[in-house]
Image (cartoon, rainbow, N blue to C red):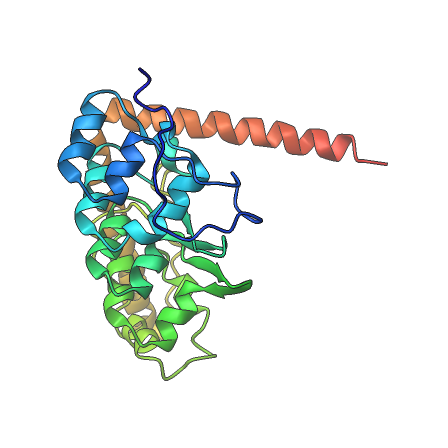
Length: 276
């Protein structure tokens, strides 16, 4: 018996057969246990050799749209390696709504008010905040700003999310509590660096402004803030190295470099051989 094989199962959620792939849900034992929120069975199946990769990806993403309501199931998946920051699940950043449009996992958790799941996802490298619902696209950053949700933005900043993704709206929403919070708190200490795109690269030192005679104090204060944030960022990266182990950390860097080189070769080939 293949533990990952498809089983007969009464599908409990909606399914858009025209826009979903496959045309009908493909359920196996592990996905069944997830749908039924049976954490003990999920653990047993993982121990017996079941894998997330053994689940049909489209059906899994459709199921995740509903599973994000349950912290215990998501925590169980993460405990078994469902990590968005590196490895084999980096491209599992989205779930699918009934009409088959996508939602970033964290923005879906935020939208339904599950801040515990939202934070858990951020801590483990799931940072996709875009969504498309009923054919209309949205940026999660703007939705969070419009709701004045300082709690959400603080969670993101504490896990390395770039503040520039929010501050680019400061002229559009100058009175937003989120914008004011970020302006008043130029350094928000990181608990992890999992949402930072530089977590597996050498973090660049900030470019400091040379102080003049008349504005020395303000420039020195600005430079001090830049350095404080830089040092906190480096410290968070150091903690990631320690938690992964230097060997695994370096192996991830090597793998990322191979992927970058492969993509560069593909791009250069496209430029050298454009379609006529």
